[in-house]
Image (tube, rainbow, N blue to C red; front, side, top):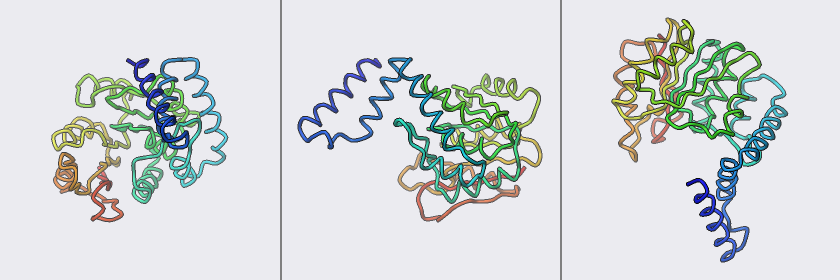
Length: 260
């Protein structure tokens, strides 16, 4: 299947180049082909990952959090980027709260392209353990890139798992080794039932004084299946909380934070 996909991508790019010129081939097509070839040819993928990590380490000249945020939004090397699917102002406010907390045990549900994982590693305690749960496994060659987000004494665990599965919760408990979470970020299943289940399963693992954050609390008029807003408006009652929203009319995004 991967081979046929690579062939299809190459044929599509060649057709566009022939009909409209090479410059008409969208950059995304080249990146998709590079990713697929990296999947198909492991030595190529490993070499690409090493080059990306080397470039990332070159850029890592200081430990300033705001510099790390800029890096997450602007870094691109060998077709690899990890720009967070977040509004800059909202995630910046959250990260400064996380940095003040200095969490030593962090969990995110929903990894996406790895942007928030990069940022949470930058904001956490230098010896923190970070658990990143996602239904989709990262490409094999991308695993060392994600692992490189860790500070020298941090540990990053990538879990390909359904957060709603009790087995996943048990794996999380095993990885925590008796500790409690300091910070939990929920950005997975956006249905009402899904976000509620994530909260009910993992919020009890957060210690007193810790934080639970939810992404996409703003009303999404064009995507009615996003029901985080509905659950957020219920769960925030009776909790000290903050709403990190650039504009309530933006129709997307927004971060809600519960202080436990």
